[in-house]
Amino acid sequence: MHRRVVLVVFDGFQLLDLAGPADVFAVAGLLTRGEGYRVEVAATRAGAVRAQNGIEVTAQTALADVEGPIDTLLVTGGLPVVERLREEELPGQVARLASGARRVASVCTGAFVLAEAGLLGGRRATTHWLMAGDLAERYPDVRVDVDPIYVRDGEVWTSAGVSAGVDLALALVADDHGHALARDVACGLVVYLHRPGGQSQFSTQLNALTPRSEPLREVQAFIDANPAANLSVPALARRAGMSERHFSRLFTEQTGLPPGRYVERSRADAARRLLEVTGHPLERVARESGLGAPETLYRVFRRHWRVSPGDYRRRFHSEENRP
Image (cartoon, rainbow, N blue to C red; front, side):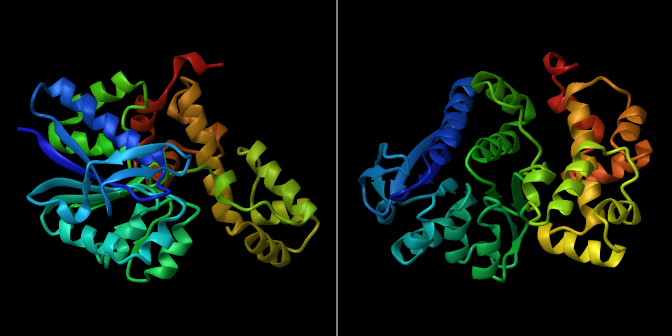
């Protein structure tokens, strides 16, 4: 039997939020030969719906006309989503359909629709990192986690922005049919094999702000370029020509991260890159990334990406990129 998937769109939605998951489900259907998915596109009105990039897709059904059980209800995202929340019909219909769905999911800012529909209260959820603060402020009962690519809380799944919808859909396929099928779908689409949900959406350099102060910008660049150096607060404060207290205060204020936390995340990024592009043993990866010992490497990786270093290397190591 086919699993019924209803993909919800609205004027101004992100096309890849729709196309990515739709293609994952379509390829899974081909590979399962009759035990895959039946995908429907729905909107508040049936007919043409214009994506953010100007391309129009056809919603076969109006949300109000969708009846019967649904396996997966998935809401796409897009920049105008907050405006669409003022139209009560969209979150209202999503809430109605969710009550008859086995599971509910969102891509990117589709999480705002789920939250407005009352589906994320008390749950852990994620969204595009640029909008995570807005989601948390608008819906204080939602436990917003800005880092993961996707989050599962019970039968409610949320993902980060745009391409993360592919990771989410692969995870849904793996949940239904096992990781072997998800791997085959990923190979067919020539995408990463199902990045673990806990993997960070972005690197430390993107996560932190660029300091306004030139000495702090130089310190930040030094940290990222020299993970194995002495990056203690006293050493960094001397490099910036400041007292330790003044340096810590300004660095936190201008980057959004305390110095120690920034250093750990930068070193974790360095270790991640070494695992991707080298065959170095974990002892050397830990040493060259400034983390010191394999035990620390493991602990930091689990904290930041919720996978072990070995599992990360198995998923993302590329022989072609080795120096």
